[in-house]
Amino acid sequence: MKIVKYVLIVVVLIAAILVIVAPVGPLPGFFIGGKQVPAPAQWMNTADTDEIKLRIPGTLPRVVIIWVIQHGGELHVVGASDSGWVKMIGQGSPVEMRLGDSTYALYATPLSEGWEPVLTAYVDKYRPDYPEIVEGFPSIEEAQGSIAVFRLDRP
Figure (spheres, helix red, strand yellow):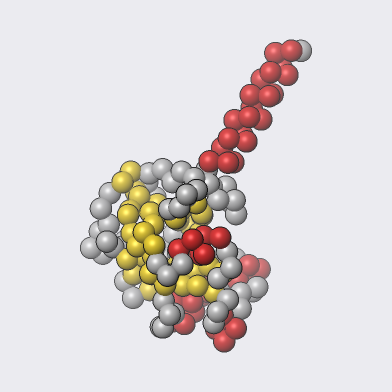
């Protein structure tokens, strides 16, 4: 009986550690994993890619699992202006992006102009598979100030 108790404690501790250090669903983590590779001159088609991991540096770095949209040949991410990772990026920040097994060093550049077509493409991409989530997004008119759109630039 004692062995079962100890095994259960170890399993719970391992699960707790994984939740703390790795992003799980909406919970951020610290480690991004993947193999560091240079960013390609041209991104592969991400139409079938729903999620990426994005690591934002800081005193306590944050790794989030987030949707990605390819627009105009560039990759973009979208977030609520009041979310922690968006605030950490602020007016721009180096980031790491994990796409598949590869991790790329990039720079997140906020779009202050021309973000509307990116947000429209983002909503159009995810509406078929996640209608209940996308339904809660603000309209383009309401998004100004409440949504942040970032282009993931190569260094």
